[in-house]
Length: 381
Image (cartoon, rainbow, N blue to C red):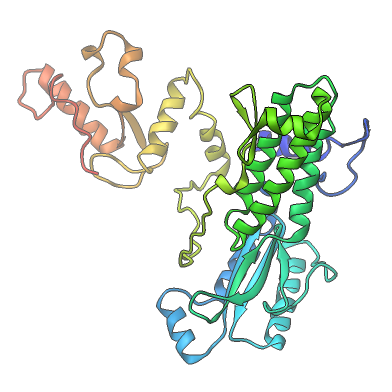
C-alpha cells in the first residue's frame, strides 16, 4: 500500500538490462541479477513456505512420526531455488506432493512450476543445490547419512577465477596486487564451501592450483624463471611479495558445520492498524530528522501499542491525546519537552482527569497532581 515503495519497485523492474554495453528493455519478469529478485521471490513464494511447513511435523510430533514410521517433510528455499526433503516416504508420495506444489504455485502465487528443472530423486543418487552436491555417505558411526560435498565444477570455477585475478591481468599490474586479488578469490570460495563435509580435500586442491597460478603470474610480471620466482617469492608452501602481501590459503579457513534442529516457521507478529494507508505514512516518520507536532503524536501512538498508558484501554487517534509526562515548564524550551521519552498516549478520560487535577491545584483545591520533579512515571505497562 506504500506508493513510493511500489514506484521504486516499478523502476527497478523497468530499468532494462545492459548486455555488452547495450541497454535492452525489460519486457517481462525480473532482470537476471537484479538486486530486487530475492525480495520479490520472498513475496511471491511466501504461501509456498507456509504450505510446505504445514506438511511437516515438528517438535514432539516429529518424534512420534519417527517412531511410527510416518513420513515427514522439511524444506529450504533461497530466493526462487528451493528443495523439499522427505523422509520415510515412497516416490509416489513425493510425486503427489510435487503436484500439490504445482497447483498451489499456479492458483495462489501466479507462477508456473518448471517441470524440466524440478525432479524427484533419492539422496543416494545425489543432486546439486546452491552450488553444493548432496549425496548419501557413511557417517562416523558407520551408518548412512546425507553429506554435503563440493562438486568438481566448483573447484574448476575457482581455478578459472584465480587465473582471471592473477594471471590474465595487464602486465604493469604489480605482483602484490595480483596476490591481493587472488587472496580475495580464495577467501570468498573457502567461506562459502567450508560447511561441506569434504572441504579439507577441496581446499587442498584449490590451494595447490592457487600456488602455481601465482607462480606463473609473478614469473610473467617480473620476467623470471620458475626457479628464480620460487627462491625469491616462495615462503614455505606459499607466496609472499614485499614481506606484507601473502597469498591466502583456503586450508587456513576453519571448517564449520553447525547442525541445529529446525525451528517452527513463525513470522513476525507486529501490531498493525486498521487503516493501512495511515500506517504506511507512520513508517516514514521514524527516520525523519525534524518531525513535526503531528508526527510525534503518530510515533507515540504507534510506540504505545494503541493503548492508554494510564488505564491500558485501546484507543484511536480520535479518542486519545498525546500528553507530556513532565510539564513543559520544567524544560528550557518546548522542543526539549516534546521528545518521545517525555510523551505518552492517554485516553480522553485519563487526559481530562490529569489536567483537571492541575486546574484544581491552580484554584487552590487539593489534588493528586504530580510535581515537576515527580512527573517521570510512565504509568502502568
